Image (cartoon, rainbow, N blue to C red):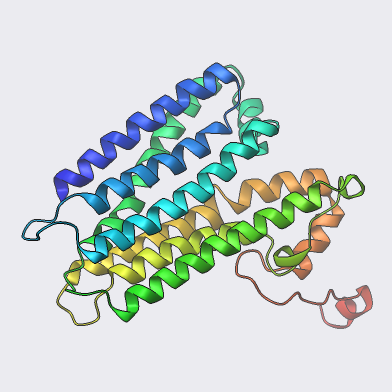
Length: 276
């Protein structure tokens, strides 16, 4: 398993180095997200389809996980590729380009190597799910597949709702609070996190026969930390506050940041005064 993890790490470092060279050539760093998604998808497929010592041929579990990884990677990767091909550079990378100035290419190179290591950590959850010694597909495995299906569908719906909102000229400069975006300020991030919950669920063995399985929880925990505290919500909301101002402040007051929850009613100024 250690050798396989090291091979995956090396492969992802190469993928993100190619991503760096490509974005430098085309002048749009938004492409690196598509490279990351397809790279992790290929790594996950490699993990799923690598022969397991002591087994004859591919197991049902390997095939199921390979299908799960492929569907996730293709859906998200193609969405990102189409988006970056038809739009200006993602606001996060445009902000980096502005802040880093002449040092942008050097710093983005190392930023992408860190992303490769992050992808390697996530791939361990896939490996642990694949190597679960349960002889047959369990109810928990089908539950994990259902979670993944919900995650992919939810993320697709959120992306479509946002694209539809942005396509209306009258909505320019406004905050999207339609559909899932009325329940979460970042439903796309929530459903992406749910993908890694699915792989962790598939890895977990409640019988105690597979103690390594609990390491798989690190994937959704790490993804939650990245999305909520590091490279997801914080930079996006900083930019939204600059561009949308009080409208986004009002949106923050009524809408959950991450987990989809019913919209809160905004307090009036008199209510705030009565309940400091």
